[in-house]
Length: 286
Length: 50
Image (cartoon, rainbow over all chains, first blue to last red):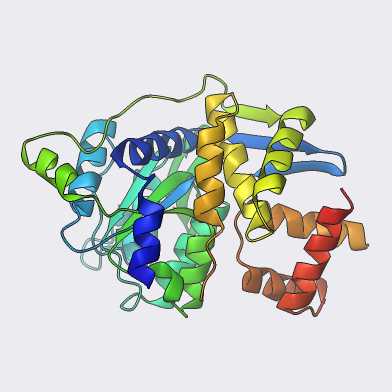
């Protein structure tokens, strides 16, 4: 039953659409601020679009991530991302600070390959959730290292007096073979609710083309010139009205949020992308 | 007060925060106890009033 549903979903999702989403996600990681104007006040929207790609074993998910990493010049995919690897850690012997992936991937993509939620420590996922929602993270550690501070425009990474203070921004791309909608794991549900979920089940013809060297991912730099974007009332209203007509209320505002982020990058209303976000975002957990 | 809370909830939802997290945040930050059904009613009511 689940497989049949997936197949229906897949009819419209091919590698070109996945490439488009990845290119938009990469661009959002470079945007500093999105302000949405609404009649009752302004909202600061998180800028980053996160993608959750799920598919069968052998569906070339890892190949896709490796191509994304190579073509976008971002860090190679992580296969086992623990809390110390994500935030940073202190080497026991040298007392040197080892900078975490959250800073190394700033203004770029953080790629997670075959992320197994069952094996993850809840704290690892909670830290990841905090970082992808607002990008800020503070924690006191019972460890000592010489003070470190790195600043990159509005972002910073510091370790002083045993305390991490981080403000970073990256777009997360997770690939997994786990079908997410049957999960009872609260952390996974929270993570999926912050992502656009893309089923990736390439047909034999696509796999054959890949075997003959055809690329899975095409890079296009969509980074907007302005890094602080205001979405005016008329554009926001257009998005809200469009989603309102096509959605029954399921994940309604989350879908609007993702459509606004797409608009912030493209600077125009791409109804094809909105339709996909509505379709993919309207799926409920069982 | 209700408008202020609703504004906050809408901001969370736009940023992709899950329903159960919103319920937890309202309990911790605003001392408001609400269940999933009541949360959905609140959002739907606001949507209809637009």
